[in-house]
Image (cartoon, rainbow, N blue to C red; front, side, top):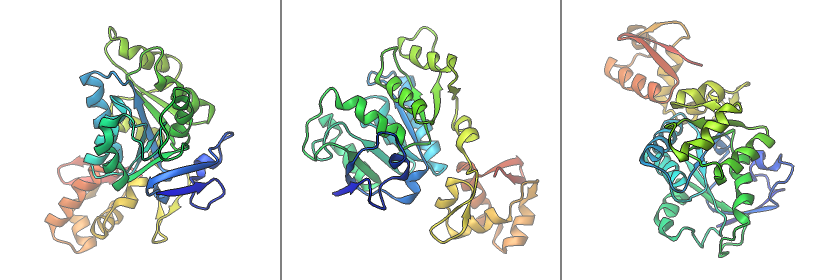
Length: 291
């Protein structure tokens, strides 16, 4: 476990820029520079099967696209978001209202251990602290503060997820909402957000259109310019194939010629680049870059 102060170099930059940043964070696991490209997924503790399925699917798709998934480890949508990121082999961060040792709810002990191994558990509270009612809204500002945007998946009109959405708006973050059945109580909060201007989300592509590429290239750990978070997750073979793809239609034969790789290896890399939302297939034998 690590204690981070707001003046420490590895303290999350997005949190440091908030008007009311936490003075310190207890961290179980590890925060990485790539976690600066994060998206929060939050919603009801009393989620429906529909909501759980959407949260897990969105988290998995966005994790594959290079985003770290942030949520609150609560029952329902939060847990589904963490599990979706883990199942996709991505990173996820849980922001707790309790201490990072005293897991709440207790049935998420196993999930918390998985998250610590593939991301981090963080909290302002001392490690063994019990959760208190007032600490939940406080931690919600950290969930949104760590993220480029917040996706709400199922929320009643008085849901705590709507508090997180309000924090996001105050912090200048993007707000997204997943629509649901018009006769479902759990959809009313999301429909209200959409009426007020939140971006409607049906698939991860709706989020990626808003947040998918950087305004200015960032440097990867190897010092290479990076335009999209998914580029940080590519192996050397996938990087070579991606470099050979143009923004105009590019044939598989051209990529094979440019890389000198066997066609099967190129096709395998193309499939992964599609999953990571970096390229799109135009026809059976042509692809193009999205960024």
